[in-house]
Amino acid sequence: MSIDKNLTWQRILIIDAGDVDVTQPLSADICIVGSGAAGISLALKLADSGLAVLLLEAGGLKAEPETQTLYSGSVTNTLLHSPPDTYRQRRFGGTTTIWGGRCMPFDEIDFEKREYIPHSDWPISLEDLEPYYPEANRLCEAGEYAYTMDSAFNTPRPPMIEGFESENFSTHTLERFSCPTDFGMRYIHKLRSARNIQLVLHANVINIQAGANGKNITGLTISTRDGKRHQILARTYVLATGGLETARLLLSNNDVHKNGLGNDHDVVGRYYMCHIAGTIGTLHINRPLTSLWHGYDISDDGVYCRRRIALRPGTQRNQQIGNFVARLHHPRITLPEHKNAILSLLYLAKPFIPYEYAKRLHGDDRASFGTWLKHVRNVCAGPFDAAGFAWHMLRDRKFADRKFPSIIIKPKAPIFSLDFHAEQQPNINSRITLGEEKDIFGVARINVDWRYTHGDVDTVSRSIALLAEDMKNTKIGRLEYNPESVEYEMTRYGAYGGHHIGTARMGTDRHTSVVNSHCRLHDIENLYVASSAVFPTSSQANPTLTIVALSLRLAEHLKNTAA
Image 1 (cartoon, one colour):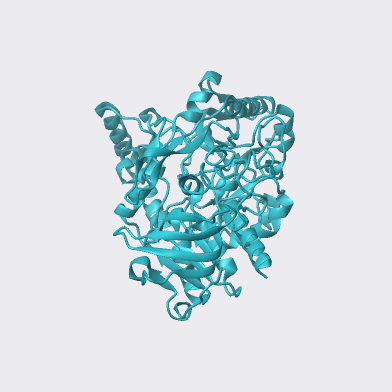
Image 2 (cartoon, rainbow, N blue to C red):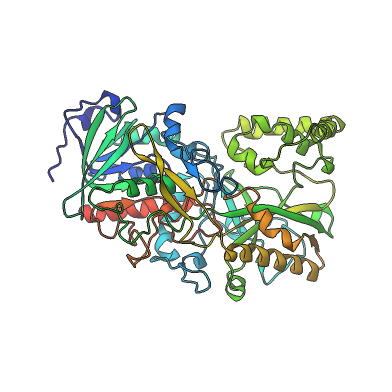
């Protein structure tokens, strides 16, 4: 295919699809669909590579309600999964415009084939991805690539729980926090200065054309909301549209591949994972508050870091369960019996908290007037605590460039609940499909059928039981909880929002995967995927840092294969 690199590359670096001459196709060496963390990282890595890059974004520079509705869809079980348009942003910067900033790499065990976790084999190892994590960490603005206490801090820090030594859990690993960085606003100037990158806004991909033999993509059709259409021609195409939209694009383009692109074996959209998360129990620590640290450490370069109680790899293998971490947490906000002015203030502030955080803080509980009144009384009983907390959140979160990451409440006694975050097993019946409803372009909207397994319940149940036993044996304290309530607590708020994983999974077997080890569709020579859609497993870790690392690895592969 001949690529016409016209003068547009020299003159206009950010354009709107509505302003483009429809008689002339836009052309490039590489076309990236999506400008979130994956798409922008990929484009930046290709800057000044000598390759012409088109970066397509379906939205504009800011949020647009009418554009956002294009992410709408249906959910099979609304108690288990949020509406598809709630945790995703169809705009420049993608969902980095609303993310919380939590960063950590995957663990070595996450890449291993674990016989006790079906379909857990990655075709790459941590060693393959390790060279790209430091640069990913810089792009995420999470400071140094140092995720243990020993490597992150030059001076000793007080222990998380003094005297807690366990063969099953460690407390020396960290999660680090981005600003959180809006990749669009943070890197727009770098994209502007890279003369080989052209960003096209309001470019909704409505068709991906496969060649007659089905082995390559010959072009894309994009459309604006008012119906203005353009052709996109490139040698290589990358879908960087997230785990849900990637499945939708692959499934809906079935002109040549009757089951959809990459879906000859009915794998696209299957194995859909998020994370299993919740809050459970009451942890009584037999130590003074001065011997505990459950807040944030600040690194020398000013990055917020937090320690976790992490299940050791050896224990995961011995117990045959997935990855798991926990944090010391405040009591449940919805219960006014905690008599904490700050927690009640948070409860009353629910209408002002974004959906994705309000759901996790409060759930969908509908409180009675009596409950609401009790929360008001709590605030009135501790006005100085509530005022101090409000000022802290305004100063250190609302108006700070690097925001305080989450709610940390200093208890008056060493009593906590346990906040957990666990790996979800791949499940062939947990899937994204095309629904019956279509959007304004005639493209089918998605239906989300997220499911969890007995293995997921087992991971959380056994991990919590082990922690309770270790607390008891070390005489550190006691964890009081109802073992029968674990499944309820881990599904109380449904799938952990925003972590859309596994719908175009990576592997060597075409019958059980969609892309190969370089994220290219097995049977289509010039179509790649850059997102958590390609993760075969979910780990305990939030996906963004690994998404960026994989995108950087893909960029290097594309540069090498283009040479």
